[in-house]
Image (cartoon, rainbow, N blue to C red; front, side):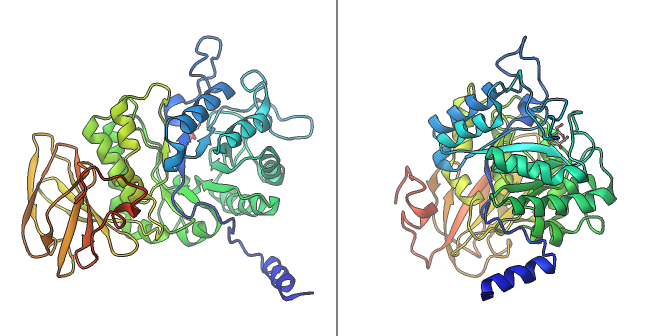
Amino acid sequence: MNPAGLIFVLALSTGTLALDNGVMRTPPMGWLAWERFRCDIDCDHDPKNCISEKLFMDMADRLAEDGWRELGYVYVNIDDCWSSMERDANGRLQADPKRFPNGIPHLARYVHDRGLKLGIYGDFGTHTCGGYPGTTLDKIHTDAQTFADWGIDMLKLDGCYSNATEQEKGYPLMSQALNATGRPIGYSCSWPAYQGGLPPKVNYTLLGEICNLWRNYGDIQDSWSSVLNIADWFFDNQDILQPAAGPGRWNDPDMLVVGDFGLSYDQSKTQLALWAIMAAPFFMSNDLRTIDSRSRSLLQNKGIIYINQDPLGIQGRRLIKEKSGVEVFWRQLSGGPSVLVFFCRREDMPYRYQTSLKKLNYAAGTYQVYDVYEEKLLSTIKDSTDFVVSINPSGVVVWYLVPAKQMLTDTMLFGGDRLDIPNRL
Ligand code: GLA
């Protein structure tokens, strides 16, 4: 046996759990049906919005034709309520024949033909949260193989209708089963969300070895209070969560609801900025067929995407929570640049926040500052000099900072070709 073979056998015999699928080295981006379209299965009365192959084909068309795919939004993800209520004669899951008349493999080809990837939803338990057939321990291999045979690229494995003891077995087993198919399938684990999201019940080291991303916390809704509640939980627990993230393993604060009904323009900017600081997956759950142009520009902001997709994959942190209601967040990017997000939870009027880079722990020196949403280069700032930022109610100001000793050129800013800077130096 050659050395490679030997190592392979050793790896198998020690029962290694490592999820070695090579995917999602930066946070995955795309579209996910749940928040916006839920379990609408009434295709007779609501054909445009019901969970059907048509909905996913429509979204694939939009991703491919409206400039999303080129920016990295490549996943088209099915959530709950896609399947038939019964498994087939061979015990395999099957799509609802009425709503997916051409079946999932056809949908996968449709999506792949447009340079996109297809994600699907399963649930480790007797039923999905919506009451459809779940994946119990004895079905894990069958379902992993079915998804691979269909050409699936990502699996979100929910955890309704299973208990903690079962989940401890099921989630690692599905990881192994997906690996064993030989098809790289991104693996999203809802496991921690069902165990309170925190140690000792949740083992983030293990999750990083077996899952590519994981839902830590409750479901997002189409409202500002929901976005705020989720952001607060993630940053309140950042000492635990932040070290867990890295290339191939991401915390998932849930979908982007930008482009829906619940967030104002400023609140939309805030969700995007905080999710970028968190190195969170960017799964939009909105209607790409009817999205308004301002929401689309925010979701397609190249600076925000560039920050979110930083290859170093270090999740950012909250630096300060001021009594005034201002909070400052920070993320280190690869190669020297960093990001600051000034967020204001006040509800009165734009708030003038005064601080300095030194107060925000920056090393002595001068920094070039680029305002990401304004798409404007600001003057250089010395660490010790106080400055004032005006932050809108429930809004943000996002700064991309480059140490001045690293010459600021178009190429440096967001990698040049990935961002057209309207106001060049
Ligand atoms: C759970 C998940 C949601 C969604 C629904 C589907 O609530 O957390 O993201 O998948 O189930 O029923």
